[in-house]
Structures are given as structure tokens and as C-alpha cells.
Image (cartoon, rainbow, N blue to C red; front, side):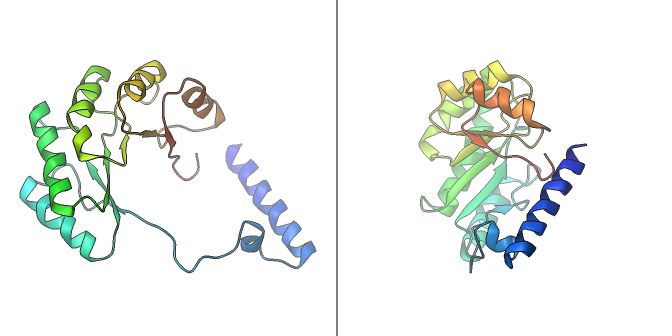
Length: 178
């Protein structure tokens, strides 16, 4: 049903555009010459530190001003902190760095690591713990200055309502089709 509702909304927008003699794109705000993007998928969890130290600057030199790395499977808290430190130092302070945990940390672990990496000024920390642990996400968001992002594991309006009403996240990042 959600897919049918989205299709219906798109069809209504197309009909409105046709009636007004305008494109759907113009009804939604028009075109941009450029759209902001971030590098994602190049800084994955299995990559060792020496790879990250080289890949980050390559992405920056390609023009990316934001990039997302993965953490979460390091054997120690110190290793997680080191991973973020290496990335931050390799790309510099003028590039936004995001870190995706993919729900791999406990609430306590996320707060502990989050506090230790605060000096590296992450743009956001994504999915630090279980997606449906709304109180736990709220504890993390409350304990850290780093914005907490989540949403790609949620479908339908109800989970997003829980996230927002519980102040569990700072940034909503739904997956396409959510």
C-alpha cells in the first residue's frame, strides 16, 4: 500500500503540472545546476587504516566536501577512535565527515566512543545502535554534541514519529521507499 500511495501522489503531481503547463520538477522547486553529494561506499568497514588515510584525500581531491565512513566492528574503543582520527587528519577540517555504525554498538558503547571522538567534529553519527531502541537512541543523542542520524531501517510514518517525538535523532535520513 505505501508504494501505491506514493504512485498516486506522483500521478496527482503530474496531473497538476499538466493542467498548469509546468513540469513536475518546476512544481517541486525547479532544477539546480549542481546538487550536493557526499562520498559513500568508498570508506567501508573492512578497509585498513592505511587505505583510509589515502582514500580520504583522493576523494577530497575529486571534489567531495562531505564523506561517510563506516565504523562499528573495531575490536576496541581505542581502535574506533583511531579510525576516526586517521580519517579526520587525512582529509582536514574543511571536509564534513560522517560515520555510519549500522546498529553495531550498544547504547553505552556509542556514548563512550561518541564522547572520545567529539574533538574530530563529525557531521553526524549514523545508526549507532538498534534502530528500534528509541529510548536508547534518545540517550545517545542527549549525551553527545554530534548529531545523530537514523532512518534507513524504518518504513512508514509511525517509526519516524517515534524517533522525532522521543528526540531520538537529530537528522532524519530515510532510505528511498521508506
